[in-house]
Length: 227
Image 1: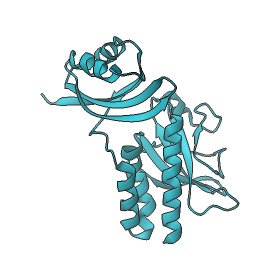
Image 2 (image 1 turned 120 degrees about the horizontal axis):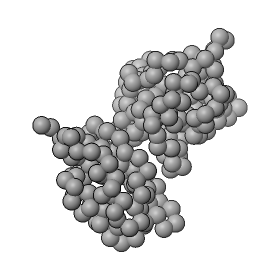
Image 3 (image 1 turned 45 degrees about the vertical axis):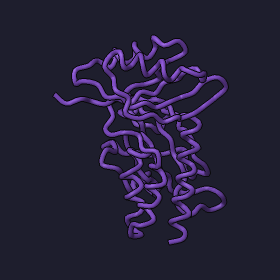
Image 4 (image 1 turned 90 degrees about the vertical axis):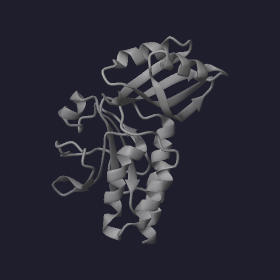
């Protein structure tokens, strides 16, 4: 019986030994830590994404209980995950986009954004005369299409309101958290095309993640302009 992996996002006290205690507690329930990524650091706390591998059939609640048995640790979210966290994932994606043929570059972006940015799906959209045009989409993009958006044109990466009037009901039902960033050459500091990212079931995008998405979108925009 093969093992399965989960991605845990945890808040923990930013003090010596916290991560070691967390690793020991997770290990006590049979979880093997495959990789760890520091998402954000604040005053006295850290937010980490941890990929763990457990035997198939193990309950996610067991991982949550083990983690939160450590003083100062809170689990923000847990979800199934394929693979491990990649340290240089954004740089590798930019290199792949730059190496692709011009018309394929944005498709490369949306195909790889879910893995690189740890989201459920990604699309590139623009406003059209009859509503919203989906220009590119990852294979995991929802079947329900947008009929309107309130955030275009867009000037900077931002987290979007999951309960806004333009959000389809099916997206709300799946508790989809979203972020968007400008893509392409901007006019007057704003862009008419956006990279739209969805994370079904959460968690919310952290400020550091929004900043990372913004850096990536600006680099992609520069690559597109140079080409």
